[in-house]
Length: 398
Image (tube, rainbow, N blue to C red; front, side):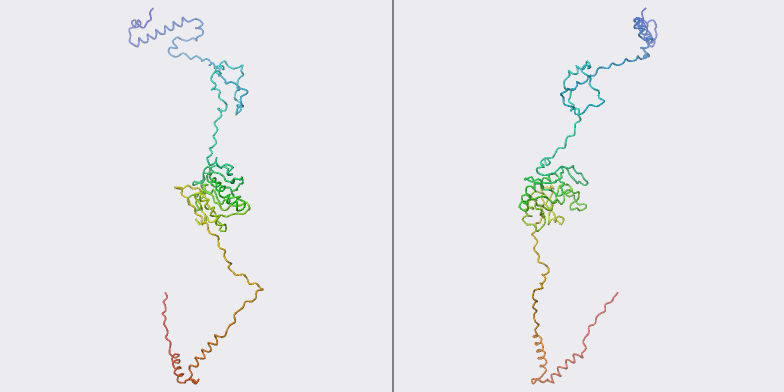
């Protein structure tokens, strides 16, 4: 019996739909025959189902078999002569198996290049690198100054700065220390300039005065304020930690030299003036304004074309003023001589009066009656004649 689709269409002459159904029936019959030819063991193993269940997808799914886990290769144990690891293994981390219990895949893993076995240090997180020191910070060593670094300051209005130090003392060439009282908070470049000024210029100058310099009187260093402490003024270089106010130099013998004291020798003050004006971009002292009459202001502000300001009037010493009151007269001193009064002026006046009285007399000494009467007449008329009076206008008052 032939079940081909071509002959089936001849046997049942119907449309395309009928021909498709016939083809499906033919395929089902073929599958049924194939299932009957299978062996008894295979038929028993299969679940009872219709042969066309797989054709239409209605056959229930078979349970999957348990997946077989492959052996995971483990790293080789750490050699005994290797250095100790930086960190101890975690408590919950499994211990590596012994050499005899390795999986068969372990030799293949061991044959791989050594790049898989990296040192333990590579597993550690990269530590943050230390901040790079500036060239000024590297040059300002303890052989020049005791100036530990401090954190950067970022205040309101632009106050503060970076690369800051606390200048505590300056080390001279002979290892003596010049204390900065109190310690000054400055930028590293400003602190280095002050240390170089003291070591090179001030130390030799003070050596012949009182055994050398011992301390530096710091009047003011870092302070977040405007210029001259005026509210709303431009930010001072003190607010940028770029200025230092020096009031005096302390000597080893205990004396102090005030840089603005007019009793200090003029030559000494002029020497200090030329020294600071050659090193700092701004120098303000007496004569600049009344804010700097008792100290010297030094800073390293950067201006256009490297412009510098040096305003410090080195005045002459004050003159010695005489005492205002004379000294008291000692008790043992002799009494002062007083000039005697003379009666000569009185005698002259009496003679003049006597001469006037004689003019009214005649040559014989007797009074002239005719002249006396004529002379007396004008006197009487002068007495009887009324004197003119001046009238004053009364002012009106409102």
